Length: 83
Image (cartoon, rainbow, N blue to C red; front, side, top):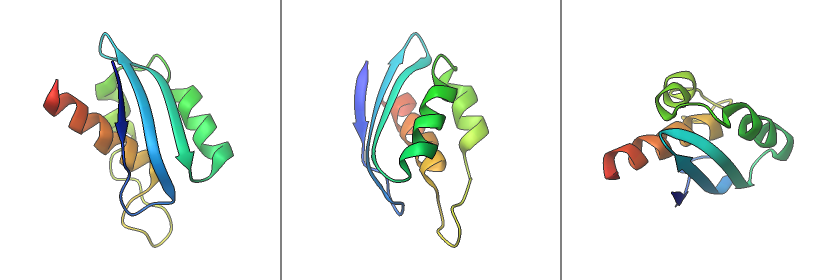
């Protein structure tokens, strides 16, 4: 299932996430730090949703209260709550 998430409080503007059988099978991020987010997308590919949440939840970016990785965790929490 592919779903979109609008991150809050970070530079990225949209996350398009593909989850199949409880695993992240694809991630595309619009905006943000392109190289870092491509790296994150490759690292989480094939990873169980719960593991991505556990690893990325609570990460901060500089003085911001969140980060793009933490927003990915939030997106996946929202996905779990709705599916």
